Image (cartoon, rainbow, N blue to C red; front, side):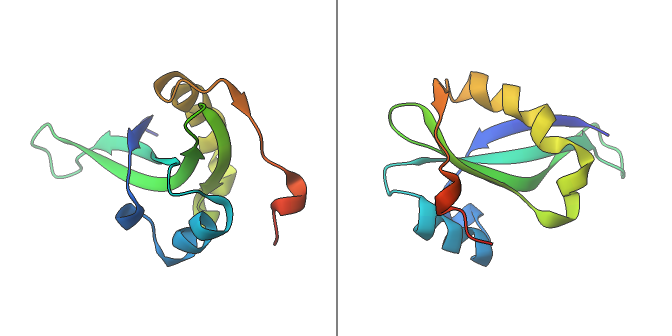
Length: 104
């Protein structure tokens, strides 16, 4: 399958729908973390390619406030695989996602 990884992102990394979610749940001071799947380049050359499959918002107190995994990869178990990586890299201390804030 490849390796999951995270990298610091910015608002321009997000697609239209994700920007709406950032406006709804995020704060300008929140750090955006890209959730990525890194695979071997199928054309060779030894390079690896990172495919972004979601993002997470972590506030300045290292609290995970929101995350999203794109619909078409949701059943692949990528969040389960990337969560510990995100916790380590972003130094997440706790998770505060209020269900009442999440709208379908």
